[in-house]
Image (tube, rainbow, N blue to C red):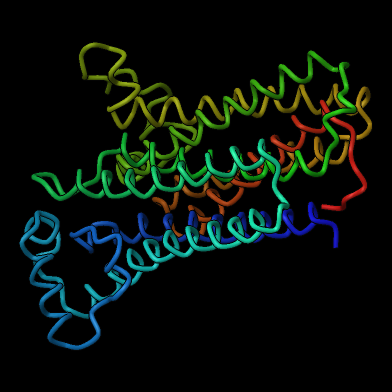
Length: 342
């Protein structure tokens, strides 16, 4: 088997488990499980409570923090075990991702499969993974003092880095599938437009995390109106005014909704025009317009259901696919394919 194909298989496994970890992170957030493990033990934290006494000790430790005292005072041990499970799974997936990365990387390095440029890029992924672990604890820490909710800014940063890692790994895979020597110099306009779409999708992901962190759908869960208001400007009560678009629930949801309309319009324009000019990304362009339409539908369903888990998770999953398809489009607009099959 060609060495590049072996690396691609490894990168595919890595991306698959990273997607699983992102989805488990979504479940952790939606079930309010993220503050169940109140200590960070990077080395020894892989061992959960294994007997009744250890569970009682862990539960008692949880009881000393604001989430239990202010929100979960009637929680039973069985309920604690449930939220502990999801947070534990999320952290274990992070550890597993680290091993899944470093062990094959070391083997490929020893066998001489990796050139210097690819080594540097893969080490960058490893650094990002370590940063992601730290940011995850930094996020959890924000909910362990006074107010028992994690900072929506830190939540957004945590999710943003996860999407950056996933997108970057996929870009590395694409660099092995497409020959950079045979660079296509046409389609400058479509290259710039695809870059704008990727930027807007990442911005939308950030605002999706803002909405999740602020739990806006618990307060505003009607569409197309905002609890009877066509525009929610009367609810913008923070000063200075711009702060409402970052910390006010109505303002954050306003940005998230109208940014979705902007994105679907630009992607529609992109798909309509690129289909007639660039035949080799015709299929991907059809994928992205289909994904973004379903993403908007799922966004509305997530909203009106007050973030029902099934709708929220599918909404997050389609966001993942949308980013990856746009990364593929951006790459295929610039480079000619090799013979390796994806």
